[in-house]
Each structure stands twice: as C-alpha cells, then as structure tokens.
Image (cartoon, rainbow, N blue to C red):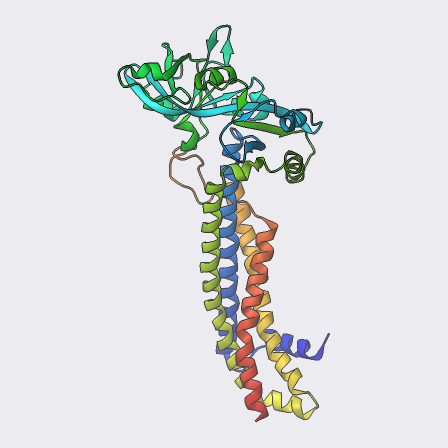
Length: 409
C-alpha cells in the first residue's frame, strides 16, 4: 500500500475534529450514489422499452430483409437471389410483394399496404402468436384468397375479424393514367376473404395499415408477375445475425441492401437512442453538480489537515505526495459513491423486474405492459461507472492543486 493512499484512506474513515466535515463527506458520497443509481435505473428503463419494442416487431419483421438499392421492384430470378436461395445457412427464404391499395367494403374505404408472402411466412416470423379470432393463419384455399388484416384497419372498416362479405381491393394499373370517364378501368380489382383471424402487433404502423395475403394475389393485383419488392430471410439456429448479414451483403453486391430487425425500424430505434442519450447527458449534469460537494468536503479537510501536511513535509514527504493524498481522498469519495450507487441501482432494477414496483396504471391490461420494463446492460454499468469516476476525478483536481500551491508559497 502506497504512502499517499494509506493517509487518504485514514482521512476518509477517521473521525474529524469538526463533525461538519464528516457530514459533508457523507453528503458527497450520498449525492454521487443517488445520481449513479438514477443513471443505472434510467438507462435500464430505456433498454427495457427498446427490448419490448424489438420483441413486438419480431412477430412481424423477419430477422433479415433484402431490398433493392434503387427502385421498388426486383426480378425474383436474379442470379444473386437464386444463389442466396441455395445458401446452406438460410433456413427460410420468403418472397414478398408489398404495395399500397384501396380497400372498399360496405361503403367504407381505407388505404392499406398489401403484403403478399409465401406460405412459409409462419416459419419466418411469430405471426401465429399475435393472431386474434377463431380461424387459422391461411393465405389461400382453392380459388379463394384470404386477407389477414390488422385489428386497427378492421376497426377503420367497421369489420369483425370474421367478416362475411369479401373486401374489394383496388390498385392502379402500372403505367396508365386514370380514365376520368370510367376510373374503374384504370384499376385492377381483386377480392379478399376472411380466414376468421386478424393480427395485432400493438404498433400502429402495422395494425392500422397492413393486410397479409398470398404472394400470387399481390402479383395479380399489382401486375408484377415474376417480381418481388423484398426477400425475407431466417438463418439457421446458432448463426450470428451480424456476421451472416455482412457475408450476404458482400455476396449480393451494391445493387441490394441487407437490413436486420433494428435497421428495418431505424426511425423508431433512433428516436429511442436519442432520448436515452439526452437523459444520460442531463443526469451527468446532475452528477457534476453532486460532485461539487466533494470540493466543499476536500476544502474543509485540507484546512483542518494543513498542520498535518506541514508535518509530513518536515518528515520528508514531497509536495507531489501531499497533493496525491488529497487527490486520492476525493477520488475515494467518488469511487465509494459510484460503488454504492451501482449496487443500489442494480437492486432497484432487479426489484422492478421481479415485482413491477412502478406501474403504468392501477388496472391491469390498460397498457401493453403493466409496469415499466427494465433491462440491465453491462455496457451501461461500465459507462455509468466511468462517467462517475471521471466526473469525480476532474472535480477534485483544481481545489487540491490550488491548496498545494498556496502551501508551497
């Protein structure tokens, strides 16, 4: 144990002649601990919301999605896509045709996104986990095409999940101008029947706009035989998504873009990350203010221990060692506050995870979840610890340097 550290540790835990110094030191440690615990809790709550939203989207979004870099459609038999279909690391390969159309039934209408998919869509996503109704996930049967609509879209059309009449679906013909004398001639028209189920992702983007159907129906409606708007993939178990994404992107070339689940919802997750960053910055300012208590504690301690410092100088201690003693004193306060704060923050997060102490409302089922979600990430703990230590170390530098310079003079 070094000489400056030994003296600093004694100063921290020993009783001072003025009790106010002990109180201020305790307040300094408490302030840093509270700010640290707040950082851990707030960042973990943001992580919880991010994980919750990601879990909601996984029921509808594929693990990987291939899109053309330019334009909306791409040929389904492109050599790169055919090679991708045969890739041994791909467990599910689903072709998708997605575009906007007009829905009309019982004198009610709504704009919707028609998403035509292959029959293996249930193997690609967890769509069956979010279905509502007495039927099953079915895209077509014999000559009928089924449409599985979001619950919000069904409400816009005032339809139950098991609507009896078919929905009329209209899409403008490709490359044609609308004939105002007979507008219907400028649109392709198809019918969708109900399989007695709908879906609820609990995200308005999908629930209020999307209809799932067969890819053959979508190709007829949009007159895009042999084309796709996207290819959705699921990897075989045990493979790393990020690594496979890079490999696939390299093989496909610049004509295609490969998106993972987070990139498919880039806007949503970017907003959440910005909110998390802003919260981190505000709490860091609060932490900086709490660190000013260390300055007061150190200033009073240095005044009280001025005679000790002179004695140590007489015994052979160098000015650098005297400076190190008080520097270490302030750093020990920061370190102790950081450790206590992290322990308290983790305890509160664990209690919230298991018992849901802070809830959204008094009645269950009012919101998507009943209590605030929490997800503790190791990176956030390390970031918080480094922030507290760095803030505390910087806050003690000036007063200690000023004191030692005056003592030398």
